[in-house]
Image 1: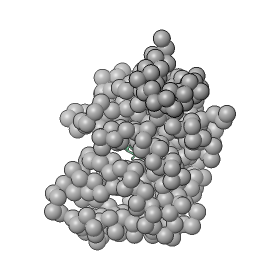
Image 2: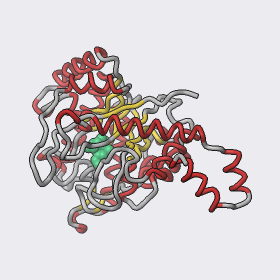
Image 3: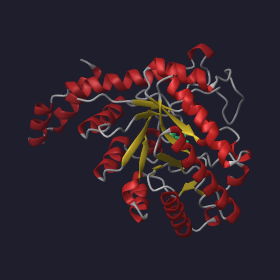
Image 4: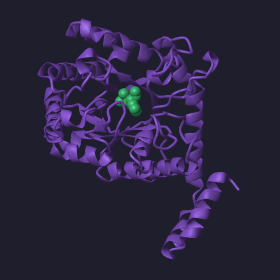
Length: 343
Ligand code: 3MF
Ligand code: MG
């Protein structure tokens, strides 16, 4: 059996600031993060456009590409690949009310400019994957946007990206809310529908984040399975989340081990990764974490994920299938939980 390959974004190691308080740890340079990612066993790095090219609004298209090439050199130095580039459409003054679905035409044009630059950066970094976390594509005031118009705008924005580069693939990371109240594309089902409506559905897929599924009140393993059934799980953001509260990006498996097991199980049963897909992490250290422990949550997430791989390998499918045939689900559930507990 092939080995999973793992990826992580530089924002996974951050200084600890949240909406209610300032940083609690020192900033770490991109190069130092790359070195540590490699040492921890990661194979690839995920990028926002401005993780790779800071202040790109102020640069020409050629300057943006040149800076991306410099970052590619840095990746090569540490023998890391770039997994994807995601336009950061939620931090900018132009996108306070969304990008592709903003009610301002100028802001929609800005969002497309950033999407095209993300594609340019992806090419320079050697990846064909663009991730869209549609942070503000929704409403704070329900009456502020038509959900019909906005959904069509989203499809058109993706079509424009597919036309801009005939090789890139676009991958939507759905989330039901936060920072907006009502998102237009909240679940994998929404993503599959948007994909089907584009000019090239094969090139439009999903990035399932465990925590986002939990926030939608759904089971992450079932969401993964839904995307896999349509052959459209282009990547994953593995993490954990304690129920329907603020987005927590906890280490993988620390809240719900059975749910973690079932995510790994559905990925392994369907040969996820065989076509180069990465197991991506999207985890944050707790705010109280000390500087010297800035990477513990990454280490722990990888260790828990790999431990679950071992549990799936130990899963007695003959026994489980017999219980399924006999509809002995009490026994099946007990067997599964016992395996996870190791008793
Ligand atoms: C928010 C997220 C984002 C995305 C990232 C890449 C900051 O809930 O999960 O992390 O994953 O923007 O798409
Ligand atoms: Mg994410």
